[in-house]
Each structure stands twice: as structure tokens, then as C-alpha cells.
Amino acid sequence: MNSGQVPFLDLVTVHRELREELRAVFEAALDTAGFIGGPMVRDFERDFAELCESRFCVGMASGTDAVRLSLAAAGVRPGDTVVTVPFTFFATTEAISQVGARFDFVDIDARTYTMDPEKLRTYLETQCTRDARTGRAVSKRTGSPVTAVIPVHLYGQVADMDPILELAARYDLIVIEDACQAQGAEYFSTRESRWRKAGSMGRAAAFSFYPGKNLGACGEAGAVTTDDEAVARGCSMLRDHGQSQKYMHDIEGYNGRLDAIQAGLLRVKLRHLAKWNDQRRELARGYDELLSEAGVTIVLPHVPSWSRPIFHLYVVRVADRDRLQKDLGAAGIGTGIHYPIPLHLVKAYAGEGFRAGDFPLSERAAEQVLSLPMFPGLTPEQQQRVAACVLESTRATGRLVSVTAAGGSRS
Ligand SMILES: Cc1ncc(COP(=O)(O)O)c(C=O)c1O
Image (cartoon, rainbow, N blue to C red; front, top):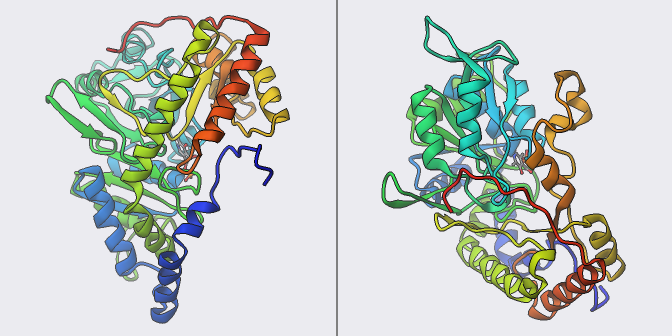
């Protein structure tokens, strides 16, 4: 690679550094033919549950399976409505649809990009009626009972969980955390006066170990964490053809198991996660400092006092995002857009009846966000170069970013 170039993500160097340890996993699997299940999966599940401070972890084939199967195991039924945000990866709503449920959206907080609890409250109070018999909220849009909520811990920052959990308790909603981007992130719960780990607060949580995640496999992988034994058991059965024991198919399930080799590789990498997350936080501080002189032409990531994010992504916001991305591209700097189209406006949901303007904060974010290079191993020189190019491009544009301030979350 040309020394001036800065990749968005470098997944080669990290694996080169761990090559011997990772090779030993392959060799152990080959020597024992332990490809499915077995100690590699169990050991990883134990260690990952410990990291998340949750009682159980059930390895899954992907984060998408983790969302889908945790919804089902926690009791979401076909025909239910599940509420989430439109500013997330498509898998969140795919998983809802694939359990036969409908989705509704509430908008995000303009600064954290995660679910705005006030919007959730407004949704439950004004977009739903109460079923006189069950007491449940019923969505006016879908006509079906709202039984679950999925806050998404976007970019490695936990959503404002206290008020979400409070509303969920009041409306009898199952909370499934989409923690796919948040391995190791923390949230200060004022209710409990303590820091909580992503994945330990909902009825269950879904994690993805897609290679680019902070903890990434060398292929597809995911996991569910939960404190609820019945949910853990349900997930274990659903991922394995509904089996309670070999060939005892108590229910119909799926083939959604975590591959043993991936579990072994993840366990090696898990030992480095705390260090890598610290490095990402350090890099985020570096960007904050380098970019601070841009003032109001760049919006930097907002970290509320209750959040210890892990910067899966470092996302800035500018008025002319496409120009900035083009300028950085021309300078050999890789960037990403997470995500360019809020889900209520994607083609797949054209039949749902949503319109532009329905979730304005998500729409505005989708137009303005740009993810800068962020990975452990990004050098200070590379980071300085990225920052200098960002400053040069935004200075040339000189446009102020207008972010509609949204109230709601504590900050
Ligand atoms: C927020 C979110 N949810 C769900 C997923 C799905 O995870 P996977 O790609 O492992 O299926 C992802 C992965 O990118 C994600 O970022």
C-alpha cells in the first residue's frame, strides 16, 4: 500500500500479528475433527458471557440469526409488532419480519444516533391504542399488539437504556438489545447507580462477529446473551433444528449454529478486545482533538456522561458529505457511510406506506454522516493525515452543519 493511503479498515495486520495463535485453533479443530459444537464453542460462550456480565451466551451463525432467534425465544410471535429505529443496518428489521412480526419505527436522538426514549414514549402514547382486554399497546399502523422493542447500540454506543427499560416495563414490552456493534460498550444506569455492559440489560441481546466488528470472526458468527435461562434454552434449540437432545426435535428450528473454528478464533481475539477497545477510544480522542478546530462545520461524535462507547465507528457529520467523501477518496483515504438510506425509505419497504419526512432526524443523519478510518493499528501519522484532509475539504466548503437538536436523552 502507498504510504500516503489510509484504508478505512485494516483486517490483514491484526491477523498477521495473531497468526500463530489462530493457526493453533485450526490445527486443534483438524486434529479432533471438532467442527460443530464441542468445547471450542462452549469455552467461547462462557468467556463472552463473562465479558457481557450476563448469565448465558448462545453462539449463533450470525448477528442476524442472533436478533431473529432471540426475538422468537423471548416470545415474539407472528403477527406481533416490534418497534425499533430506522437508522440501523437492514438486518434489524429483516430479523423482525423473519419471525413473522411487523416493525414500527421511532426516530433517533440527533446527537447519539440511537433510539430517542421520548420518541418511544410519544409513539406508545399517540401512535398506539390500548387493547381493553390485554392492556397492551396496539399499533395504529400495523393493527397488531406491540410486544417488543429493539434499541440499537449504534457505532458502539449504548442507547439510553434506563428510560427505554422503564417504558418497556410499563407497556409490557420485551427488550432485545441489538448490540451487534457494541462488544464491550458500557452504560451508566442511574436507576441502578452502576455501569452496565451492552448485552446485559434487555431480556436478551444480539451480537454480530462479522469480520469488521470490534470483535470479529474470520467469517460469519454471532451470539445471544441473556440472563433468562428459558430464553437461552430456546435459543440453543432454535439454532439447532429445535433439538432438545440429538434427534429430539421438540420444535421446528433452524441451522443457526456458531461454527466451532470461528468460536475458537473468536476466543483468541477476545483476549485482546479490551486493549483494542482502549486503542479505539484513544484514536477517537485523537480525532476529537485534531478536528476540534473545524468548529461548526463538523459535528463530532457525542458521548453523553452515561456512555462509555467502544467506537466501532468514528462518525462525523458535515453539510456536504458526498464532497468530503470524494475529496478523501481522491487523497487515498477510505471512508464508509453507515447508513445512506434510513430503513423506512429502502426499496424493500416501499409497500409499507412510509414517506420521506416521517423520521426527519434519521433522514438528515443519513445524508450527513461519514465514517472515518478507525481500527486498532491506525497510526498517529495516518490519523493526522486524515484529519488534515477533512479540515481542508470542509474549510473549502465552509458550510455549517445544521443538526436539528432533539431533546429527550440525558447528556
Ligand atoms: C446493527 C446491526 N444489526 C444486525 C447486524 C447483523 O449481523 P450479521 O451481519 O452478523 O448477520 C449487524 C451487522 O452488521 C448490525 O450492524
